[in-house]
Image (cartoon, one colour):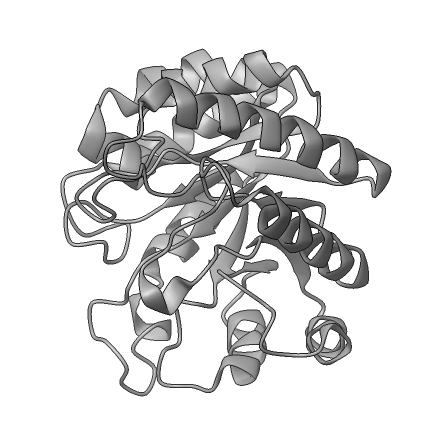
Length: 273
């Protein structure tokens, strides 16, 4: 049975962040994810999770100077110390929130830097970070992201991500498989689910409608069909991960704008019941 998490960085935008936990629980989500927890004490977030019976399933490690346009540090030579400090901070939060996985953003490929140099830095950083995460009993995730949403992002394709995971060789390093990004960059989403889910290298799935990144039942992807594929393959291979709704509600930041658009969630739960 599929388990769904609400991405609280995008959903319920009309509410203050800490009030979104209650809203997600009331709407039937069992877990939550978001970009970053670091603006709030971990104890305060943990209290919201406990009060609402929610699982924290994912968040991102510090990405560098986010407001300045940085989207991760892992592939950037010369930023290794900052990267390591960020991983340590992320793992502290992961333990406090009982969160089993942390997403590590690759970063933007700097102009003029050979891709192979960035790749070498990326692999070395991930190998170190995965070892630290293993000590804390956590998984690290890497995510291919389309270059329309984030121009210049280093990691864009599923095959590239799985090759990096194999190159690092750490069992707790996995791929964050975002169907939205996959459809934009390469398509053939259902077959990629069938190919990669059984490998054991997919740690998390995310969804959104394509191309506007609204609810999954808006746009060109047939999510009811894809949910059936995930459910079928997961039953065969024992995958028990989460599916995160990482999208912008079509109605925006209006009262009940997110809640009124959750027909897709109710249908998906009925499908996999």
